Image 1 (cartoon, helix red, strand yellow):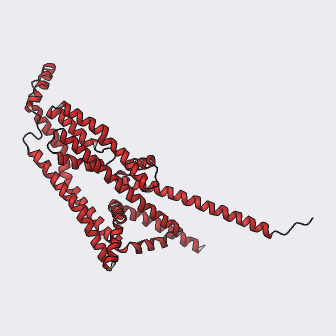
Image 2 (cartoon, rainbow, N blue to C red):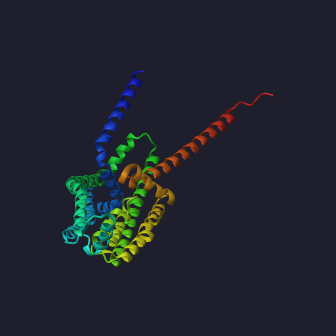
Image 3 (cartoon, one colour):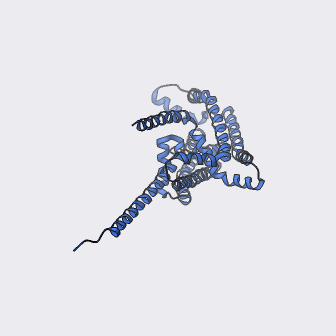
Length: 360
């Protein structure tokens, strides 16, 4: 009885402190997950450096982490700075947030005749500027907080990447001893995670790059000036399901239609965006996910969309991983049920073999 009470208390402590730890770590789940995925992607480089240099684990882990920062974060930061410069230049332009009065004259005249008002182009532009200030003011105010959170997330991801590389094997060994699951199944889940991580990262990045390049051609031929900024925005937007690249090329089409008054360019860009840019995303992701994992193309697409709908941006990664783990768990269950059936048949055969012959 005392042993059962002790076991109950231990389970209660695990539940309480487990939920508390999850609450504490919830804000770092995305950086930790990204670090784990980077370990999967750059793990071969780490192992090669460790063998080639014959150095301690922390040396190879430090070099690998530095390489990741060099080829991923530094170029990304430079691109953001370049795009930010284009955005500032556009906002400082005298015509950046103004509609051309020549374009407005026809609309204003018809509107004034229909309503009896006496609006001018300056009145309309002043109202547009006020709306822009009301819309972007809170965003600009909250930008420092977002930047600080982003910096903290990058630091957590970088430190986690280093320790996952340097102490990953020991961490995994410690976790496997605590989980009451057959070790072969634990290795199977780890293989599933590695497989789906590569598939998710490669499919997301490849789809975003292709969409950004295709959209960039559309922006260029439509005559837009800030092609680089719009292309970079398309790349980031393409990684967000439900919003996607349409948020960028759609806004650019409206700008061409109402600000530039170029109907053909606006319609052409919109058709290019609908038929090519946004459609290619639904082709690349399922194909890459299916090619690098065991997920069916339809299931792969639904796992990404459903993951984002349920969990937000982190669902891009968690959704496919959860579905892949479910498939692995079902496979394990099928294996265990088959083993139990075989053991039962063997037990029955053994019992029949040792059963004394019946007397006639």
